[in-house]
Length: 304
Figure 1 (cartoon, one colour):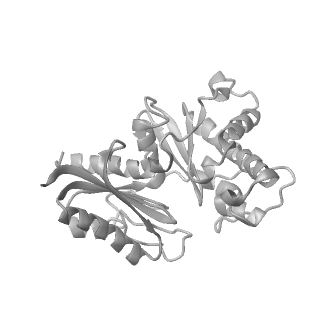
Figure 2 (spheres, one colour; figure 1 turned 180 degrees about the vertical axis):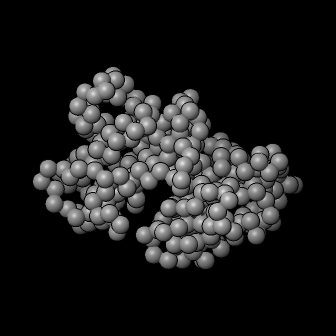
Figure 3 (cartoon, one colour; figure 1 turned 120 degrees about the horizontal axis):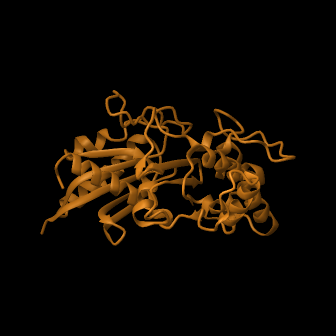
């Protein structure tokens, strides 16, 4: 029996791809995780997942691809759907949507992984019902997706919130790990920054080292978030990602943000526990967001 009007989604991260088929959190038919190697091998494995599903009787209305970046989002650009100049070796100038378009002949939507996660958190998660919020992922990299008046923030390219410049924490002489900027937010507080600083990955830390890592990351996140607060005036900051789920990080960031804002502009909401919150969808925010992207592509293509 053929299942009609299913959506396919791909969250293309720097370490793993998560592929899903379904329509939402309570309607996932299939899912798989693919470890990232080179582009050709990784994308072929993702295409094979959907081919097997179609062979098993699942009909795809559209596929949404949510990719790590930076990416080209301008639809009229000849490199639309490509990763551009990424620090991940071997992945610059990779066509992320071409293999799916060629294999299935259905509409293929495309966006940043953090934008996809923002869409999912706005529909089903920690930002549901809000018109203005920012989703921050803190992990291998740091990135952000902004929803303003119910829509993703458009522009030339896409926001690169992880690469905002931040002041140095007093006494911190760490050079930073960003290959482009050194000591930007991502360079100072991402997962690789923590691993370089402590000699172990964040999830391997315990005791006083873990407490020190949480305090450090929270200080830098608060510095970055303060710039976002002043520039975009969001109603909420949602924090996700592997490092973002460290116990104690969200409340520590919330407290550090209050200090960073220094009473200006004096809005009580900024100190409220509902202002900086953990992601409601956890690790499924990105994959579910890719389904939202697929849904939009299907609607534009007249398939829903």
